[in-house]
Structures are given as C-alpha cells and as structure tokens.
Amino acid sequence: MTPPPDDPPAPPAGPVDTVVVPRTRDLGGFEVRRVLPSIQRRMVGPFVFLDQMGPVRFEGGKGIDVRPHPHIGLATVTYLFRGSILHRDSLESVQPIHPGDVNWMTAGRGIVHSERTDREVRRQPHELYGLQLWVALPQDKEETAPGFVHHGQAELPRIEDAGLRARVIAGSAFGKASPVATLSPLFFVDVALDAGARLELDADYEERAAYLLEGDVEIDGVSYSPPQLLVFAPGHRVLVAARTPVRLALVGGAPMDGPRHIWWNFVSSRKERIEQAKRDWQRDRFGVEVPGDPEFIPLPDGP
Image 1: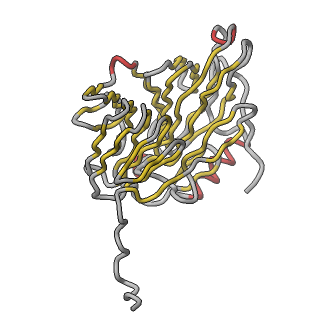
Image 2: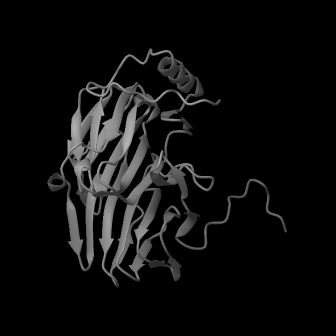
Image 3: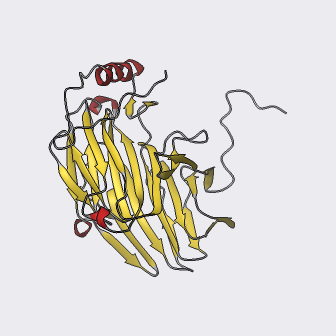
C-alpha cells in the first residue's frame, strides 16, 4: 500500500545517510578533489564547499599561484597537513600558513585575496597537502565587515586517547572549543586513528560528516575507503572503527537558515546579491585590492 503523501520518509537503515565521491578538477596544472558541493549533497551544516589539495610534489621553481580574486557571504578556512601557502588580502594581511595552523578569512560584504607559494619555498622541491573549506554566513551576517585571523597549531585544542589524536580546528567538539571565532554553531576537526582504534561521534549537531583522506574504516559493519565523504543521519550515534591507520576530517553544525546560491567565489542567500558582486568585480567597482599583489583573476565567462 502506498503511504499518504504527507507521511514522513522512512529513516535511514544505518548511521551513514549519504556517500559523496569527490570529482577531480584541474586548477591550471594543479589538481584538487572537489567534495562539496555535489549532486548528492549541497552542504553539511554551514559548510558549502570542500576541496582536497594534493598531496602533490612540486619541482623547484614551481608552486601554486591563485591570483587575487573576490569573495562575499562566506568564511574561508585553509588547513594544511604538509607544505605552506602565503596568504595576502585586501585588509593588508600577509600570513604564511603551515601544517596544523588555521587561516580563517571572513568575506562578509566583500574581500579580495591571493594564495601563492612563497618565493623562498619555490627554491627547492616541496609538497602541498591540505583542505580548503567555505562556511556560509547566516543571513543576518552575510554583509558583515570582512576580517582575517590566524591561529597557530599550539593554540588549537588537542585530544589524545587510545590510538586517537585529534585537533579541534574550529567550533566545538569532544568537549573542547577552538579559539577561532565563528558566526554559527559548527565543528571542524582533524583526526588521526591508529589501526584498531575507534572514534565515537555523538549527535550534538544535527548535520555531521567525515571526509576520509587516508586509510579504511568500518561503520555499522560496512567498510569505507578514501576519498569519500560520509554524511551521517541526524540523531544516530556513529562509531568509526579504523581497519588501518586513518586520517579524516570531521565537519558539520546546525542546519543553515535557508539554501545558498554559489557562483564562482560568491555565496549568498540572494541571487540578486551575487549578480551585484559580479557586476562590481567586472567593472572594477569592488573597491578593494591586494597590496603587494597587483594581478587579478577576471570574472569568468558564463551565466
């Protein structure tokens, strides 16, 4: 018998609600794995974008060169496992980021930044491996003043227990709170597990996911291997068992206050705001530039 149309959908059989396999994108000779947004899942909590950078090894003289480009309506989070990136922005911030540190840039009503491999690092072969995420801002904070903060790894709380090592990068998790100031309830945690170790994830947040970077895990009798984003069902207790040494990132938070539109580097709850940002950048009316980095990325073609 077909249930009435107003009946609620049946709950998922287990704790894993959705599995997202990232797609590979070429950013001018440098490949990334684009995890979010995807057809299967547009966002997890306030996280609307997730890229895995590398691992890649550059020859001497080479590196990444992401020229100055604009953002609105979001905060960007850069976190590295290996290598370094030099961040510059229109607030006159100049900050190298190293493994275990966090760069948190709030775009708000508008900011411009660049990300490059520093000249000194390019002098010899080097590696790059890390994550970049975008956090959508609540509707009443989308036009907040832009800002930039950097926190070194020594400032970020760590958890160590029975083969588990974790660092709380942003938000609150496992009874620890990061010093990074966020504008909505969320969590972002870097986790390493020894083979045989277990990780229990409670249901404090409605939306939760684990991005598998290295190693194999088992959840509720099912095995998963990287690269996969495992989105968990609300309310379910999740027990992750490491079959091998594992590296993963936990992300999530409270559901957003409505859908978000994404076009290029712009995020907003309003399509007309994105159209305005496009016109401003195209006509050189964004009003900001990056001191010391005069290049820029033109507005892409397309709708």
